[in-house]
Image (cartoon, rainbow, N blue to C red; front, side, top):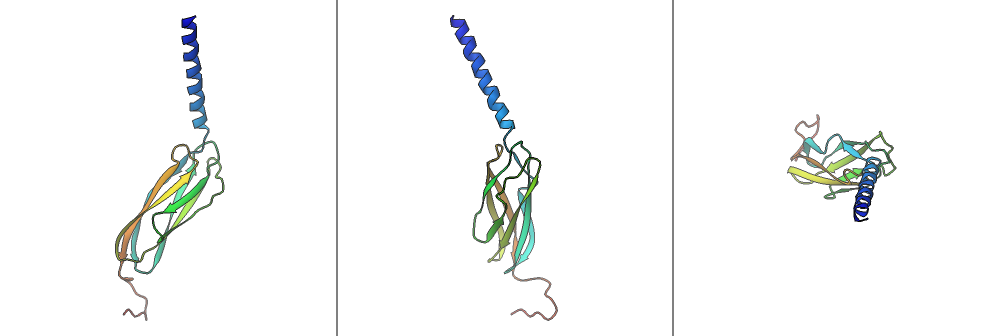
Length: 141
């Protein structure tokens, strides 16, 4: 009887772990084509944008619930509508620098993805004093 009980418990545990492994495969999965974007030089007082593309590689709808930047000079734009399996989505990042020099900003993407519920994206670049190629007739002080 003792051996039967041990075999029954082992069988039940293997079934529950099998069920857990199968449910993970049916959840949403997120895949980003890149997680770092390096801007060219940006003139002081001008903004620039970049796009981060992602794909739902899972078998359930993917929901990007929040995209939060590390500071107010970085504005993310995204859709919170569910993304069906196999489809692509975009997160547009608008950066507007107010200080000269090198910058590196972090964006946290929260989703229902099983493989990466919190994904970190980064942007970096260099803010220069002014536009190196002014238009004809433009005067700088």
